[in-house]
Each structure stands twice: as C-alpha cells, then as structure tokens.
Image 1 (tube, rainbow, N blue to C red):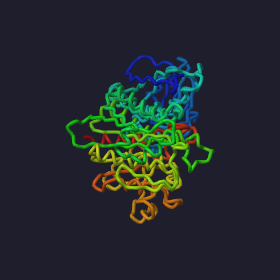
Image 2 (tube, one colour; image 1 turned 30 degrees about the vertical axis):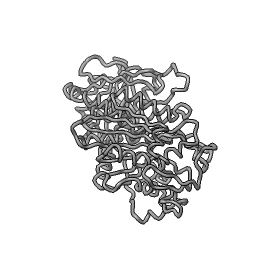
Image 3 (cartoon, rainbow, N blue to C red; image 1 turned 60 degrees about the vertical axis):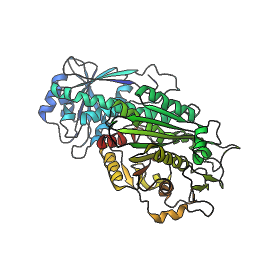
Image 4 (tube, one colour; image 1 turned 90 degrees about the vertical axis):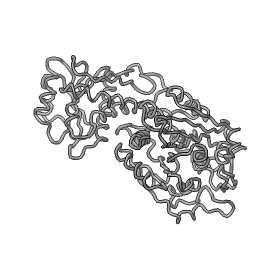
Length: 502
C-alpha cells in the first residue's frame, strides 16, 4: 500500500466483461424502479433483485450489502444512497467513501461501479460525487509506517452503465474529479507531515516543487527580505525557532488578459508551542496542523493549474515556527508591523494574526489584488461558536462574502458569517501601542481575530477571512474523509474561482 492509501485508477467504459466486484449504488427510498433494477441484474444474473426482495439492504447512507452472483460468481455490492427526499451530493460522497473503505478491507484490486442508480437519483452530478467520495475516502497517511503488504497498492475502478453514451459524456467530469481529489489529498498529506520534516524551509521546498510540477511562478522571501520589508510580526513569531521564518509567493495566470487577480493568504505555522504563553501538553501534537491554511492555498493552486481554471490567483504563505527560546518574543513586547502600526503583544499564542497581518499588507502593496482572502487555523473560539459544521467567515464586502458562502454551500464546505462591528474594536485597544494582539478574555474570541486582521486591510480592498480551525480535521472515522485532515477549503475555493472566472 502506498504512503497515502491505494491509488484509484479510474476508467469509464461502455462495454466489456465485468471483473472483480460489481458496485451498485441505489437510493434506499423510494424503492428503485423495476426497470432500473433489471438493467443492473443483466450484468449480475439477478443478484440485485434478490438482495432487494429479501430486504437485505439498509437505508443508512453508505450501508453496504453484498452477495455472489449464482452463475458468474461475481461479487455484487449494493450501496445505499439514503432517502431520495433528503440525500444530497454530500451523502453520495459519503457512500463513495464507504465503498472504497470496504474495497480496501476486502483487498480488492478491481471493481466496477454500475452508474445507472446514480444517474437516476436526481442528485446533481451524482456520478462525479460518488467517485470524489471514493478518491477522498481512499486517502491514508502512512509515509512513516511500515507498508502493509496485505493491502492493495492500487484499485482499478471501472465506471459502467446501461447507457454507453451517458458514460462517455461523464468521462470529462470524472477526469476533473480525479484532479480535484488529488489537490485535496495533497493538502491533507501536508497537514499530516511531522513538524521535524515540514519545517518552514520544508514547506517552502514543497511550494517550490509544486511550482515546478504545475508551471507556477515561485518567489521566496527569506529573513533578509523580510527585514527590508519591516515585517515585525512574521520575524517576531519565527524569531525563537531554529528554523527561520519565510514568505512564499506562488502565481497562477490562467486568464492573462483579465484584470481580476485573487490573492489567497495562508497561515503557515509549521508548529505552534504557543511561545511563552505556552499551550498545555495535552493535544499539542496536533499543532503540526497549524500550517493548514498555507497547505490549503497550495492545494487550491495545484487544482487551478491542473484543472486549467480561467482565473488568475496568487498564493502568499506566511511561514514560521512558534517556538520557545532565548530569542523568542514575549508578552509585553511591542512590535512594529510592516504596515507601520505598532502592536502590543499580550499573548504569544495569538501568533497567527501577527504573521497574517504582515502578509496581508504585502499582498495589497505588491500584488494589487481585486480580492483578498485569507485562510487560517486562527482561533479555538470559532469551534465554540460554530462547532465543526462550518468555518467562520468575516468580511468587509457583502458581495465577496455572499459568493464565498454560495460556493461553500454548493460543495458542502459551509461558511457562517460573523460580524465585524466597530463595537468589537474595544477588545483590541491598547494603552501602549496602536492595538494589542489579544483581548485577554474569551469574549467574541473568533471575531477578535478578524477585527485584528481588519486593521491591516484597506477598506477599498474586498477582503474575507476564513477561520478554519474547527474544520481542518475530523475526530472520528466515517464520513467522507475519515479521521484526520479533511482538506477543507480546497473544493470551496476552486468552486469560487470557477464561478468568478477571469
């Protein structure tokens, strides 16, 4: 088995023998029409009808029931898509993920998905959604574990149906799904890399490699360049670590004649001890994922390039390790930011907003964005406010916020907008500097982070801040991604960029 789970080799096909295992996704309610069942039965000698007749199938999304075709000995698996009155694309993805986990557990090397039930479900893009679920559900991070020789390195997945023309028409969409899933899984892999491997330099090297692979323009700003730009926030946060901070810039120009330029800014804290405001030991190992904002930006750029999106997008990564040493910044320090503002440090664990503030200033001064979007694992408070059902969205522009919200709704990576009212500015007022980096209390915790960042964005620049702290990982197995990194934000922003275009 490879380091990130079995490779799914996808092939739409209109004819030929069915080998290995036949996967038949069907709505559990209402009962599938007789004609639909009979078309599937022609491929498996009536096995589907027999399963339905004895009521062996279950209604839960992703529930699998299997049998063996009497004559051909073909294994047949019926996968529940749930209740047709309720099921959406997210349910179809979950069914695809459950299917691939079963295939891996069964050590299957070949399977065929009979797509008629998906196409008849009435769910938009159901075939693509199911295959996306398969691709995302197959991911496993195992780069540092001994390979399990009993599990498949690759699963050949054929997509078939009774309508050969329909399958042929689905083929381009399925190729896009493969590329999108690869981008999401790339982000997930980065989020799982250990901090002794994915140091600030290691993350910069990943970005450089991505640029070579995808034809992106790569720029690296090291400590000398950061000093020239007077990036006091990024330099302070990364100053206590053995590995120096940096800023990475990647550019994709898919619409060179267009004026629109989207700039994505990602928080790239490769490990966060909290600094002198040190975090508790319990759960600190998860702080290797504090660079997931940056990883998401890299995933979006990978997707934009491989999908050849009609847009221009630049990624800016603010990269540092927040460590404790004699060089580390302290509570009570006053920092001079690149924008010229001064910041009183009241909490060294509120470091993400400091590196983002300098990156946002840089993006506005150097890149002339028509819209500016930052992604960050910024606050634990966003989980208190929203749980894990949505990421927090804050913005100075209703149109931008609305477009992002619609994109999130469409791909089921939902956003909930929180206010940036002037009333909240009292929480970041300082008596010794222009502002302070933490309110020192839990009131409006997620909003305080957004209010701080707003101080470094010009009102004329459409800007959105997405706090992804609560949605970057799943705590339990099941669902689409299973336990571990989710890659949240890649599909959302790809959908947003696709809709906005050049």
